[in-house]
Amino acid sequence: MTSLSRLARSYKNKKIQATKLRRQTEKKLKTALSLKRRSSSGLSSLERRKETMITKKDEVLQLLNQYLAQRASIQRLKIAAEERIMQEKEAKERAQQESEFAESPDDKARALERIKMMEQKIVELNSEIRQRNAAEERLVKLITDTTKAKSRLDLRIRQQAKSKPTLLVQLKSSTKAGERLRPQVQTKLKQEAQLSRNLVTINEKLKLLKDKRRKAKRKVKKKTKRKLLKSRRKTKARKTKTRTKKAQKRRAKTRKRRTIKRKVKRKATKKSRKSKRR
Image 1 (tube, rainbow, N blue to C red):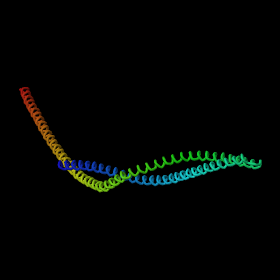
Image 2: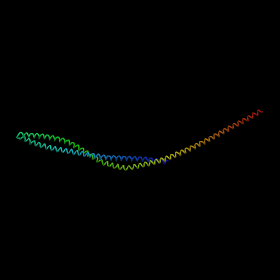
Image 3: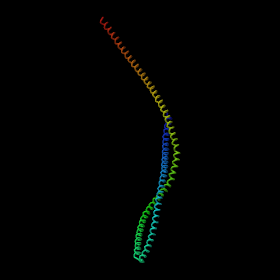
Image 4: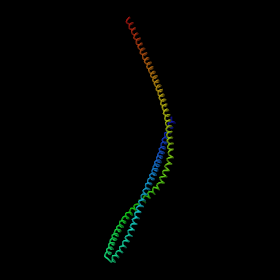
């Protein structure tokens, strides 16, 4: 029984150790699978963000090209307006000269009318140039902001490109760890189950042995009790017999004394009768 108890304790300790190792391996596997999910999710999210940012970058580039084209168009219109102003000024100078040298009032009046129209045209062209300048300033600001947005998108795309190899390494290592740890967990589970079965078998044998010992002890106890009762009965019988003998002896002595007394009494009576007869 001692050897079985030691064996049961040994299997119990082994089972506790196996359970501990199994839980540690399961924890490592859980960590590896979690890292794999995070890495895979991170890569998928990275790809989605990359596609979104590339789309945004294309939109920003398209908008930037549009603003640049508008600015170039405004600059061309400004140059054309400035050239028109120069032409109108030259024409005004010629008209002024014609008015100065006009021979008739009608020619002079027509020259002055042309000068007035030219001055009005110059004012319109200057106003148009001012509007173009204001529009160009707005476009310059939009171009600057759009260029900054494009630079930010380029930076984020480069940062994501740098983080992708790290995620790929994590995914690869966690996948390998999962493939390595999964069979280890199964092995640990089988070992733990086998130790549990062995422990159950040993405990059953130990229980049977204990039951047998308890039964044997009960039998010995009953046998001892029977012997004790038998001994007590014998002792009681001896005591009863002794008391009976003593009582018999006492009764015999009492009867003897009574007999002697009766004999003495009879002799005395006989003597008294003889004395009376005399």
